[in-house]
Image 1 (tube, helix red, strand yellow):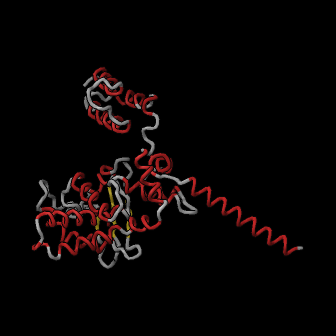
Image 2 (tube, helix red, strand yellow; image 1 turned 120 degrees about the vertical axis):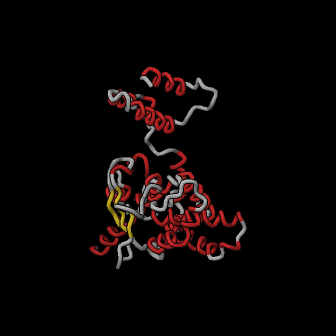
Image 3 (cartoon, helix red, strand yellow; image 1 turned 180 degrees about the vertical axis):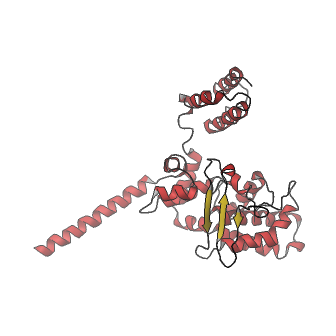
Length: 307
């Protein structure tokens, strides 16, 4: 694991010298980041080399939003009904899952699998559509044991979250709380998940962990459940796109405050604008034109009154 071999492998991948299709830019960047993290365990002096490595021209644009995510966000923010459906997913998924779990013992094998996937998706939505964490953080959250990361205070209807630096990709700890929004009550859904659904899901997991909110479910398991649940409600999206969706919805609202959006995502405003939020400039242009027309109309009425 020396620098010469690392660079040789990277250059071969970049130049397409292997028989497989070259990796996407962002994928290659993530993979090389993992390689450097591993190598620095044995060669700490590679820190400066790593910084210089990722500044080369090849990686320009690697941290920007991908076209796939941009297209998804564009479709989402231009359809108010779809935005509403997304923001209320936790309630819809819980309704579907609870109905199936009520008659779980008489379901077929395929129906039971679907019931458990919808239950997992409902619990996921009860957190991520209110507090858009990275899903890799969600699966590590502990709800039992010493210093749990997510709690349900007695006498209140909110959910509190305290996530240490070690669980956050950007090394920024988070302390927050969230509660019922509209008709969707995330605490009620999460308590149902813990009391009714989670145990059934854990029976099918290879590494079940009762201390964790998601019961030890892996990222892959949660991601698959999410794809099924959202597809059933005609919102085809990946787990990672939850952060993109929320950032884009908020950024396209009149009077949007990127600092508030960044605080919700626990990230920097620059990162939100560059990598997470799609801004619909065409719609913003239309709003601007409409605003100018309204101002002109008001001024014209004023001039007419003075005459």
